[in-house]
Each structure stands twice: as structure tokens, then as C-alpha cells.
Length: 221
Image 1 (cartoon, rainbow, N blue to C red):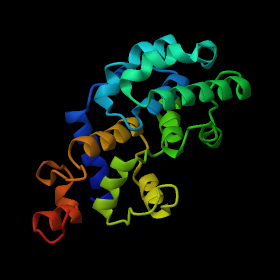
Image 2: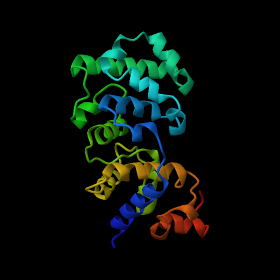
Image 3: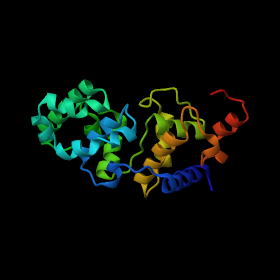
């Protein structure tokens, strides 16, 4: 088995055995609802978002509904998640842009999704994958850390400019069950391959040079 296949198989097996249970994974959401959920997941722990996001995305399940809602009412509903003013501004701009430019629907082309205000590379790819069931890699801080450590790729560059990391992420993506694979990467990064990694619990440890160096004390955290 080559290293890429070993990596894919271990991530998928980890997801099968350790998957986190979140509202947005259990229920079928529209691309708009997925995008809004991903906006909340940015800079907030998934467990915290899971406690409050369901009633919000069910109430504001279209760009039109969010456009019509008063800013103050949105702010009151999302303030417990933090970044209330910032997120309220982002939500209103996103909803307005989608309503005016795409007739209220998230477009099904990746460059157009990325062009929506406050939507960067990660949110666009997550929306395309989880909202449209399209095969694209999901690269955030956590998944990038796993791939860069395992394959010894320099991760100091900005993700948008790190072509080596982007190419490897695309190369690793399985043809089938890519959503589960992407969730597995996100879960492994959140639970095991943290900034201070739990290498002894990592399913990738036997093939990971970083784990080997870490356990032998040859590389400082």
C-alpha cells in the first residue's frame, strides 16, 4: 500500500470510529444553510456552534428571509456565539449579495461562491463539498496541519499560496465518500493532531515522520 492510500484509509477508518455528531452532519441542509453554518464555525468551536445554530439556520433558511430581518434581531440571536457585530454584518452582506446577484440561491460554481463577500477559500470549498456534494478538498488550519506533518510539507505559507499543500490535498481526496473523508480530517485535527499533538493516539503515527521525531524528542513542539 502506498503512502497516499495508507493516509486515506486511516482517515476514513478514524471517521467511522470517532466521528463527531453535529446537527449539520445529521440533517440535509441547503447550500445557503451550509454556507451560513460554516461562517459560524470559523473562529468558534464546533461544539459551541452545535448548541445554537439549528434554530437560526432553520428560521433563516433563505437569503431573502435574512435580507428582510432587522439587524438588531439577528444580533440578539447570534451574540452568545461571540463576534456578534462582525457576524451580523457578514450575514447581511452575504444575504444581500446572494439575493441581488444569484436570485437568492448559492451558485453551483466554486469561483462564484468564493466571490461572495466574507467567503474565503475554506468556506467556499466546504459549501461546494457539503452543500452541493462536489468532490473538493477541505483545507483549514487543522486539516493542513495533518497533511503537512505527515508528508513533510512546509505549512508556513498562507493556504491560498501554498500550492504544494493544495496539490497534495487534491491528490489525497478519495473518489467516493469524500465528504466523510473531509469530516474525518477535520475531526482528527480537532481531537488528536492538535498544535500539541497526541501522537500516541493518532491512526497515522506509523507512517508519520513528525510523530516519529516528536516521540524521540528530536523536534520541539
